[in-house]
Length: 448
Ligand SMILES: [Zn+2]
Image (cartoon, rainbow, N blue to C red):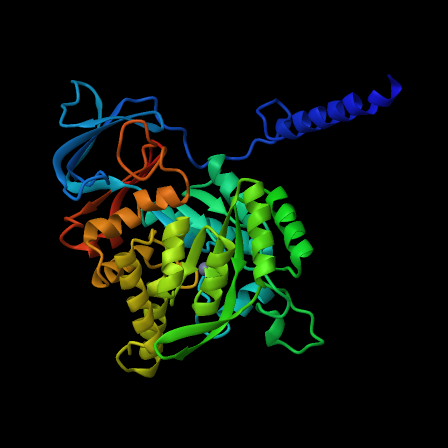
């Protein structure tokens, strides 16, 4: 009998510990009561009258549609008339769409492409200050019409993205639905600021340094325990072009990558891999990661593997265009298309042809949040997607990547009332998506 005693005792303390933890933040008299900037959704029903609707399933716009919203969900969509006295939001000259999904953001970066920008954020700003900036970036994301984002690492700000996500979920601040990765992982010596300063000057680093198979498993466990939704790894660095191929230096060994993927999947989470060129993408895909970020060059063989394994591709072409633009601006010349961008375009076109699953993500944060990430839709159409395909990459496909397709990604009964609206027809001019004039998230109007 006696030897069984410690088990129920331990279980009891474990359970009561959880209960205590859950009480923090509950609405008891002496619990903290923060100011909440976001009101709860009205009970409804609220009728949104849209001049046109891109619901996300067909390639056509439907004219004069009404979306009925009850609390945070869509109740009905159709050609119906609101009853007399009903609460109506009238958008007769606008096209309604599902809230967009940005699958690759950095709310903790306020620009990192120009010399010194990245280092200044890590060296001169506290994590507290950067978190305040992250909340303004999250606010901007929603303002640009992105009601859901996957934020792919804090660049030295630890797990503060978990806090931003939770503050948004708790209605303290305005922001999109977020999935976050916390610190991300790279191997010793591969990530800034470490290799950029004198060896005897201690500097912060933008990721968690992880080496070896055991170290990899431990890091995954540790990061997941802090509440991240994904594990993000850097599979390669640097790059050189030969024979129209971008090759890179792999960071992790294949064994290390496999350990990270295995440990993450065992805990029912997924792995996002920064992989820009031949070797990095190959290793990431072989190890079975879930998303390839950037993928500036992907070999035809690796694309086949991606299709077979259902691995997502999140190309980020706008960052390269942005680089060309600011460099030209500084030099007083016209932006030059780089050989690297040509390779990216070729990869994008081949991926489209091969049927690789493509979701919209831009790396915003690398470029500043004062411009809409939706500008990348223009590039994606220029590179061979139809406008409807590009919109789906930024709506339903993004929701699938985030495994939220039952809740977001289309304007359909039962889903969250995440609805945006624009002037004009995005199917004939995709550039209008940069100017969102109406945003509703979960039944609450953010912008009108
Ligand atoms: Zn990124």
